[in-house]
Length: 195
Image (cartoon, rainbow, N blue to C red; front, side, top):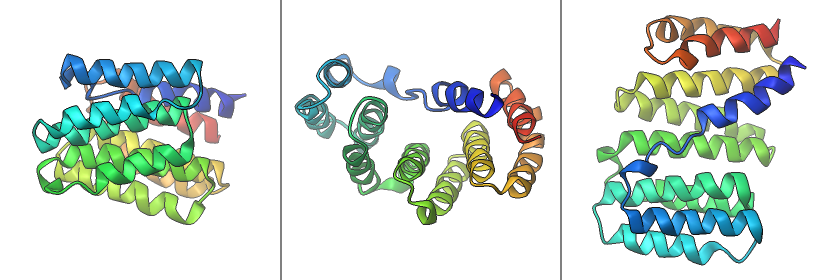
């Protein structure tokens, strides 16, 4: 039962749409239309996302990266996982990525979750590691904690509880000083699931 709780509890917390408030209303509307279309129709909805991308291209590069991240999030939850992977890779391939390390980190975290769903186990951990690398460049402790927790949970689900506990033990000092309550309790919650 506890493992089921983590699978339902953490996705909504750890995969929230971090950049959505920063996008223009027109871009937000196009993304929301794509999400709503996928929820209702389940297909033939990518035109809405493409519209958001075109609007994002007219703005600075960091906006376009955020657009790809938000589109990937919607498709991850409501659409085709292969489409999600394609949009994540487009976001990761944008030039000038050094100026947007947090966006890169979030895209790598999403890609790792895509690999989990596609059961491409050789790609999961290196992709989480890239996400952590970019989060460190962004100096974003919250993102580092989130990815470490997801990484530990993935090791646990793959049967390597010892490695999961090592990661969580390493993450605890960061989590203990976090001002975000969910991040302070998440490593303990995941540790409880392991035991």
